Length: 207
Image (cartoon, rainbow, N blue to C red; front, side, top):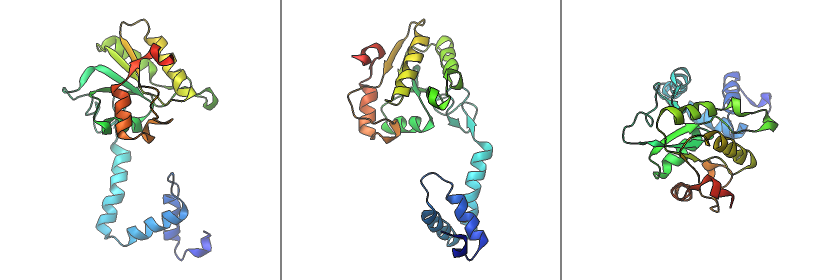
């Protein structure tokens, strides 16, 4: 869609910004912008301010590194959760995916990625040391490794397993043999929930 097709530079600028979002092409961006133009000025301000407030005020939990409105997220501060079980995930979307299954009542630890030498991501770029510190200081009895079933995910799992070896804790991984896909976010809730419940000892996951 060329510049000449826009009768307004304001419209074009808005479309260009929407088109920067992942999965949003220029046609979809134009449709979204035209939809917003049909809304009241108040509704559009509420829409825009929600993102401005998000960017300015969002925090990351000092315990698990999940997004939070406060220094410690609602999951970590919930006394009803199992504080002796920690599920290690790659990113925030994985926390949401597992929470949607309603099958896990422990805590989380968001690594912020997985080890990927091709992308220049090493262990020191991830929240691995803070995980080890939690295990050492917070009475964790089980760590569930719930990373993507890729070579990079497996490499990260093994690295963490080796780091946890000196501690007397149970290390498990989500059940294999269930088609959960490469990324947790693409797994359906029933399948993902079952893979959490049927988790196995990490050393048995190689069999």
